[in-house]
Length: 430
Image (tube, rainbow, N blue to C red; front, side):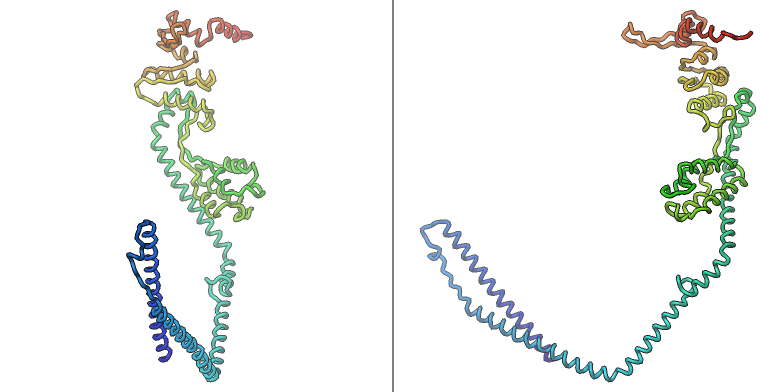
């Protein structure tokens, strides 16, 4: 070991010296290159004087090259000596290992026995395992024990889930009742108002199902067959929803049972997009049940009405309940409404409201303009002869000019009015 270390130190010193000689030779070479570069630059000046007349340099690298060659030769010899050391050491190590192997063989055999015994015990322990180790004997034993009581546990958990849903429902009911309290004054007014009763106007807060079918079916894959996948699936769910009154806890429980039974006939994990728990959380969270106030006219809820009828209902409701005395402007309330509805509800509501406030109506309907007993008519028209200027005329219906404008614009001229009148009278029995 000491001899090897000595050779290593000598080899390092020789290597360092060789590197220095090599570096010195490179420096001399660089110097020669710079002199040659300077000579070329000087010659390019084309002076009547030679570079050698000005600069005389003698470079003799022979001694340096000799020393460099000697150091490299010494380095090579030392390297060869170092190469012999590992081979010699390897032979000695092998001899030592062979002797040690013979001495340690009985101990190694005993250790091998101990190792194999430990492996056997480890495999035995792995096979037996515990309740938390999947695929172990204890795991399957515990699984069998738990499966025996699984139906009872499942029943208990389902019942707990239904109870939680009813607790949620009771909170929704509390919110509904709060809404009823807040809107009680409006409901009392409608119940005691003669005109509202005549229109069969209703106002109440109830729990309404909102978009359950769409949301429910959004969890279902559409690329496989079955009753929950075809185009009529939404109709199937809607029919189920229509069977229940979601203001009653019993109906809510029955609805949840129906939906659960619907899913039990399917392999839920195969038909659901995403997590199964997301679907069941949505169903039993009752997030689709909302306390909502409903306004009805002649027994029809606002969601059952056409856009024109909805505007009609809201306008009638506003005219009946609003007690403000500021002027009110209404733009063409007759849109999408039949004449009977205008006459039987809107006209009556406007006639009563105008007792307490000024009402200005933009209309083309004679029922509103004439039957509402308007105090003043304002006729807006474009005078094409006067550069298409917008002009206005106004007055009471008793004035002949105003009456003519009303008949022409709202009734379609006297001949048209008389024509309709004669046709309406045809065949009428007195």
